[in-house]
Length: 256
Image (cartoon, rainbow, N blue to C red; front, side, top):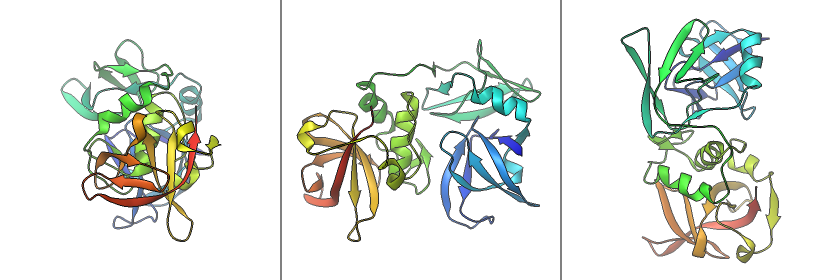
């Protein structure tokens, strides 16, 4: 087995090994993964955090040893907690790090990937946060434009949004909405929910296609064109701007 780590700011994960293939997710700086299949220009990977699989360009990651992979896997996760910051390396070089980037083996403003020392002076987050912090963390992404497969404040999709918010608070969600819907405890009514719980929505075929984070007083924050706040009721999401329902409620899940 071979292993890798993302040493660039944001790297697309694609459904097929070709540049114009659909982007299904992203790697952020510092994320590590297994290499399931290595070709001349592309590799199929399995992300350590959520076991998500897809193809990445071989020029957009660095291979690491099994020893380093295991060491990172067994260490306390540390994430960049700035909307955008940068890390310096090789004296005058720097790389931008979006919110939620991983800082593997971070200590005293320093992290090491293979033989490269990186220095990061922004704020970090390491410990699990309270459930009350989920909504506050979600607001860091407010007005982020919708981007299929995105996971950053520059573009994000509905499940990437919920996954990143929970990740920054110290909890693991799977990548896609239908996968996240398999986690946690189902609630019978909106009245039973608390801020930070997840609401899932399905299409006419019954497939779960959307997820958002419940707030107090029957509001929800979710990705629909952008990260926005709307109303939620027993029917689904009521868009404040259009005064119409946009998503049909399927289930509410308590994750923590």
